[in-house]
Image 1 (cartoon, one colour):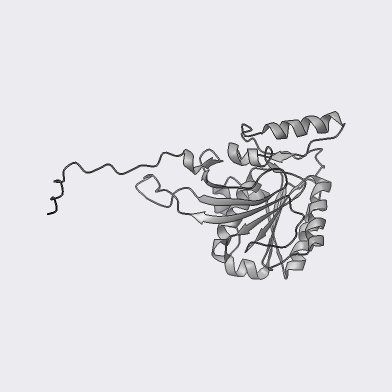
Image 2 (cartoon, rainbow, N blue to C red):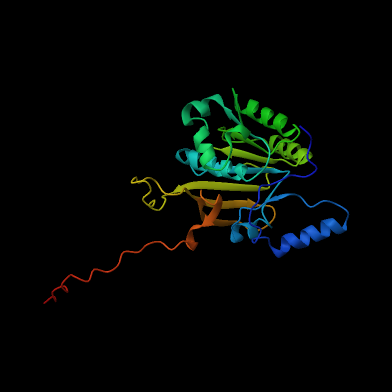
Length: 265
């Protein structure tokens, strides 16, 4: 497998690229350098806050708001990985896989992530996960490396090593945590993810089921712009995120066959 010159991302909307991101790109190009690769989410308010998209070649943290929200954090990380090209490596502790389960092939396919691109690695402890993530980031042609850890705090040196390793190969490095961290980190962004009830699914083949997944995202640390909070929905048909406020939810109409309430004395 040959080493790519730059990080290649799957097609995505670039309408959210901000003026700040374009100016930054122009300054870097003028100075003879290369602008860092960006992974746009395709939602203008989010991409504007990120300066055009999620920055490649550096570490990003994605934390569940609480342990029960771990699946939402994992789902958001996998959807980001699905928007990149190249292999996706998921490295987790044995206990995390035992308690929360491992990514499921048909589920990955529904998210737009071909299971053939997916590599699963189990490690005994958190320190082994961090070591394996750093090693995976050093491999050529890597698209995204995701490390899932459960320890409460991280050493700044450990996150700095992961960020440097991601920069050497221009890979996307995501660290998924079971709870928000308050420790110092070299991560460029820190997200807190909660699950949100989905809207009712439309009848299809005489069956009803859960609607498209929704995520309540809080960007609490952002090196390239301001923090923010959004609720996004995943459009599995068009393989993109959508801002929930942009949907027109069905509202119940007022009843017209009811008699007016009796006047009170």
